[in-house]
Image 1 (cartoon, rainbow, N blue to C red):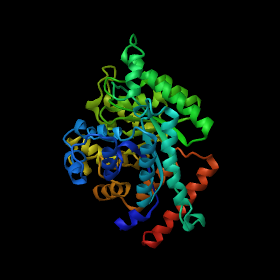
Image 2: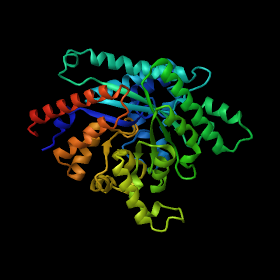
Image 3: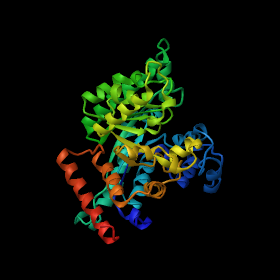
Length: 402
């Protein structure tokens, strides 16, 4: 029987988690007081009642909290602290590998350029990793070390939501918005590659987030083609609020190796292209392609229920269909604060709702490590994954699940 103790004990990964959605509430309050940021409440209880709720009525309500968290991340000191605490929180629940993502251009302006933003976040993560990996049980190999990667998010569409975006829009007064959105993505990816190569930071991948409908993936093709040529990994938010077409575009136009959410992969009514006559066949072909290529779907159960309350309960989540199709999937948090969740909680929800057996859970867990964008070379990654598997199997024996 898979128990909560076993879930906490096993080594876990989180490949889809946003830094600006994963702050500690006390830290947010402290920074807000210091930086004179206006909050609806300055108590943890008050913010949990007004902003960071267990349940939301819509995607818009879910996203409202990011207005406050992003404002708290506008200088190097705060970014480093938030990243450091984020890593500690992951380590505390047994997450051994995490790929944290965020949109650097939301934090760029007079105080910070792209390099300062990325260096600050990495400094916090690296400090936490160094502390953890210096523990005796890690150094002697009894426990797998903690590793991390950083994923930079481009945004499908934006307004004057940061100093950088405001200046970027004003610098291109004669360009249509879609061209500007693509240019911002291209500028970001070029910068990430240059900083990665010059400073050796673990900048492992790029992502595309934001509203899918009306903002197709190919607007950002040039940026992701550049990433492809420069050996920067690619994951794309797709199928979260739009259907299989969005996922297809992410894979074919942006070379996506993983898909964030992918919730509406199986929904025929979400296909709007009149040229797709046989929607059922289109979905079957796409599902088969995803399975054949082992394109991993980053499943975020709680987040999907919160942004789409019509789902109702976990058992109705499309993960059930992904499981039937034997797709490569891994459980992720999306936002630890906004969704009030952890990797352990997500796994527990899946085990209870879908009756996942020990062998399946082991596969889902190891997929997260095998399909990660590990910052080391292939040999180092294989050695690390092997250490994770060995530790997992030891936990199975200790909990009577071998």
